[in-house]
Length: 467
Image (tube, rainbow, N blue to C red; front, side, top):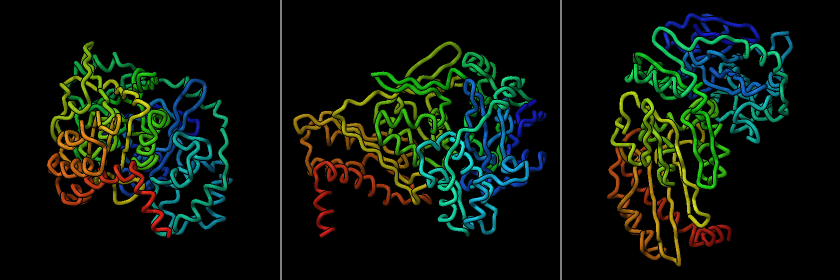
């Protein structure tokens, strides 16, 4: 049984099928047809809804894609759809602005935009101090154009809502935590014991990738374990030594801490998918899933991150680069799960550059993601860690390029030798995001650009262009 709040009313659903999506529930059982199905992969934002969950004595709201959200993930939470905004017949200010500024033409995408902008108007996760353009980066419109939509969002100032009644109702909401083919443990100990009994169960955190296995590939995921409510795995711990992130910390929740670790990490998170995906997807899930083009792993590998794995009461910590073995294979045993990630704090004089290349700026998968960490002492490279995603079957370091740098003077010749070595470090595949030749070329150019930026030659080139 799944229990959640919809506009203050307790909804009980017999969720026998853990793979049923929240979007189907919303449209076909709850008859909230304002929520649309566009892409069924979390890319267009037409299905955007808001989820609220208890955070002490307040409700933490976040915009998510309901098309790749499984119904059991609603358990114990509050749900808002576009119909929730005008139950008394009066339009919400966001809706009024969209009408007044002609922010809708065909209207199919409009409810999703409304919900994303409404989330901003109440200070939902990922929207604080965030430009409107970033808030709607995960919403696509084919006909209206974004000018009117951006203006509508900017016209409404964020205000903190009074969620007192919802807080009380959520605290009183009874939760089950299991169904016919799914479980939802609440602590890491429960999760560890459960996975010993079901070692081949599919672990689901944000479902931003696994959801597509159902909506696009029509796969049967078998027994599923939903871990997004495991309290022990939600911690973010900052110390002088570095940053430790629990396995179910979402991208949006981790962004500020990652930015404090290094600004390039925060900017990288900004470029990962759209806000709805960042509000659901987890860094731990991205690592556990072992995607060869995951944006975070190359950066984390370059920074020397380690991952802690747990099976029962046993734990082990391995370098993140060792965790990825080959395409589709990670160093994780049946019944073992990713518990946390630790990123060492870089020394103040460390040179770090992280770059994502994709066909569009917002809400797109990397063609290449490159990360560089260099230590330079007395003009000699004393340490080099270089990692790329999209260049091999797994995110991986570039040992030949690193060897071309370490112990050498930091100059153009050394940078060029490292750039040329990158073509021997990787043998990337051709796919829709880019050819192998393109990937090798841009990887080498990222190395060259790093030298140009550091040498000051980039300034002289700009000055010449201005002249």
